Image 1 (tube, one colour):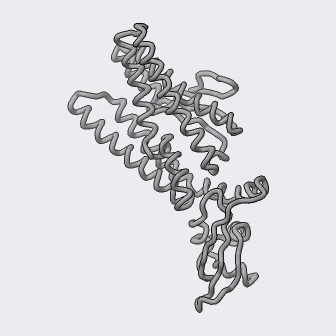
Image 2: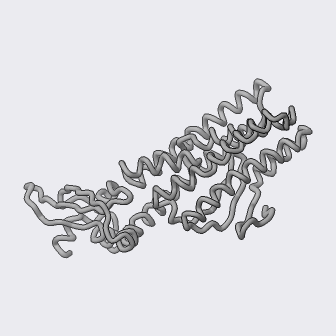
Image 3: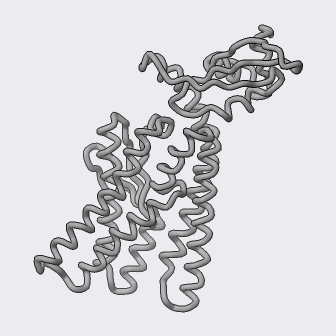
Length: 292
């Protein structure tokens, strides 16, 4: 449901968040629901501000029970440094708000009921979103760290797996807490959406990976020079297996050997990517030397 527009960015309220606000209303604590809404919105607006500062387009924001999703230009996903900057902005603002709330309390400007809830919301939002699990902010930071070591695609799969793990853990913990009468349905809803969103991120991994590969030419053309990453491969290895080893912000040069360990040639990353798009993942890397 669209609820407004801020600085040209549309804001949408997910049905699950709407249901969560309904639970707050039924429980007679709607003002707490509105505080939670405000905290989530400020968290997402921080992402928007960071993205715009990094030169990345933001189309809209969708508010979810565990935070939200800023639909940011895909270029941030394939640029680890910018992704870390944008992902860190949300939790940083929550910690800043928690600090301001503590300062206000020290000056006596404090509501004994809503003040602690506001502080709790910000601390929980920051802590939860810093979990190293996609699609949470911590998961994006974690993926950026891993991508430089194991490649973008595998890093995405690992971070998304942790998202599914934490989603399932939250659902199970929420169900146990609900049975014990100590927490409400909101925890279970949050866990379900985390699991769903992590699964969706996992499904998008191949798409983002192709974007990441295609962008390498742009990176080199723009920077003029990139650090190189040497690799050694047998000539019968599939192109799909070669590119799994590629890491962001490095330009790869692959030295080819035949089955007798003799030198066959030197292949650049651009040649491999072009061949991958033209011939598919199953083509042997040696075919680039053979000219077939």
